[in-house]
Length: 247
Image (cartoon, helix red, strand yellow):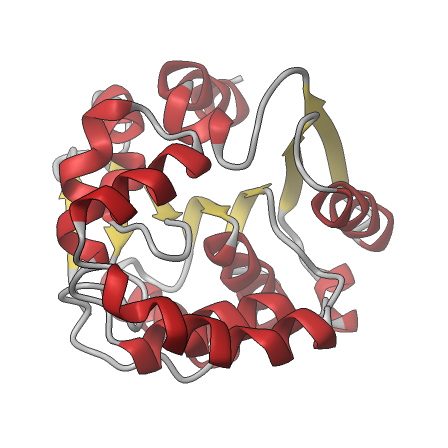
């Protein structure tokens, strides 16, 4: 598993899990703020560019990350943050290991499955996959994600390296993920964030996550879109993590 690290000399570890179709650079700016205080570990999730692994399932990726924490971080980290697909993987980590972290930030994660959307993804991805390497198409997709312009080259390069098989598997898993009942037993303090301009599915999911996990809080970020908080407001996101862990 490929990882990027910042602030290696710091004692306390923060792990950040990027969104589907993105990569570690999703959190690069936030990590630059956090590295003065924490050891920041950003894995490249399965199926993404240079991850070294095919994507099999959210549950498998969660188990691999738990194994990484066991091997490299003494079995526990201070905080795990996850965006979208990364947020789903984080939720599964919390359900698999109740003491994997002290705190968790779940951002824009769907836990309300859509079988219809999942069924449509295979043909849709196959039909459009040939366009992915066209810069004009990539720019249109990038614009729809509302990411800051400085990330386009990273986005374009790494999207071109995701196979059609992995892209289909990642998007399908994202649409079918269901919150595990065991997540309610997590010992972590869980913070749930969603943007006020996100889809109803994401907003309802945030409410369900909050209701399911007793030790949790939720916040709708006014005027923000999917992933807006951690990507486009990275300084505010980093400060929130610092405040959570340093109080």
